[in-house]
Structure formats: C-alpha cells, structure tokens
Image 1 (cartoon, rainbow, N blue to C red):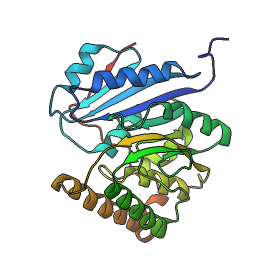
Image 2 (image 1 turned 90 degrees about the vertical axis):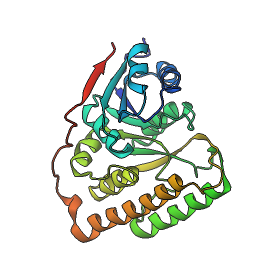
Image 3 (image 1 turned 120 degrees about the horizontal axis):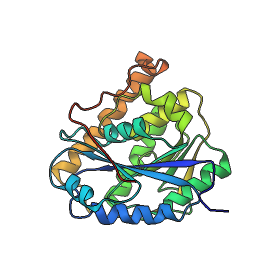
Image 4 (image 1 turned 120 degrees about the vertical axis):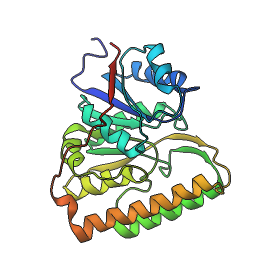
Length: 265
C-alpha cells in the first residue's frame, strides 16, 4: 500500500517573518520531514508583513505542496497562525515555528501521539521527560515562571504552552477559531484555554528536540516580548472568567485587504 493512501490529511502552518536568508532552506527541511510521514499534506507559509524579500524568495523557489499567504502589514505570529487555520484543509492542523529551533522530527512525533492517545490536541513540550532541550538559564527561569503563572490562572494540564509546535484535530479548530482574539504573544495559550472551556480536554504533551541559544534576556525587544506575553495572558484570563467571552462564537477572522494567495502543486 502507498504510504500516502491514508484517510488523514495534514495541514502544517509555518508563520514567517523577516527570513529571506533562511526560509527556502527551512521549508525544504520541513517538506523532507513531511515526505517521510504516512499522511498526505500541505504546507501553508504565512508571511506576516513585508519587511524584506521573504515572499519573493518563496515565490522563486516554487516548492511543491507549499501554499503561501502574504500580506504587507505585520500583524503578529498568533494572527498569522489563525489565518493559516482559516485556509487549512487538513483533518489534522499543525503549526511549526519557521526558525528551526525545534527539530522537524517533532512533526512525526506529535502525529504519533495524536493517534496513540486519540487526542484533541498534542502540545510539543520542553518539559516532557523525553525532550532534548538546549536553551539559556535565563530562558529556563522565565519559562518555568510563566508555567507557574499559567497554572495558577487557568489550571491547564500541560507543563509547556509556548513551544512552537502543536497539532489539533480539525473539528477542535472549527469550534475554537471563531472565538480567538490574540494576535501577537499568547495565541498558543488562548487556543488551549478556549478548547478546554469547550470540553476538549484530551490535551497531551509530546517530546521535542529544541536548540534555542537565546543568551541572557536583556535586549529591549526581548523584554518587550516578555511584558507583552504577560499582559496578553492576563487579557485571556479576563475574557475567560470575567467577560465570559469565549462561551459564544464571534466573527470569522478579518482577512487583510491586500492578501496574496499562492499555491504550488
């Protein structure tokens, strides 16, 4: 039997920002990993703003099974992933950060966990006992502090909500997507909180390989991101428990007026 003759179809969303020097190589690495799995697939690269020639590089490369969503105004990683979800055709919908800090072997690992546990969501986790991680002490301290913060506010049953690889069943995304608001820092957490509040409680962790040499957390950009994620996390708490916002579906995602869609068969 052809390994692709399986009922499930995978959509892998890759949010991209300012990566003209590396994006083609990274997409080819992701495609190589996907060619080895037993599901057919599509890749959706969402280019979050015109800051360099990332779009032109992908367009010139013409990589098979890569779809491209491109808009000129930067809107944030969480928005980019949500837009990709809106266009996803897969029975399984996954996203993977494009910087390649997470090894592409995590793709098949999360898929196998999804099947094994019959899960709603599988979260790639730095704190899974089988994970192999390399990142700075300052990053570890911040990550653990954020885990405790999230556990206190939401009681989410996973130990790492922020690693840049996750997979969802399509019917979960169909229910969750119209309720999402976050555009920048805490979109990963918002999906988990909303899914759990809707009764999708089969959420489990899978191991990943991660090499993230951040160094000391001192730059203004990094400190701004830290502040942003904590503020966005408090906003999710306010919407979840005070406003009860997530109880109702709201509007579909607003597409950029200048959205370009390319498909390479």
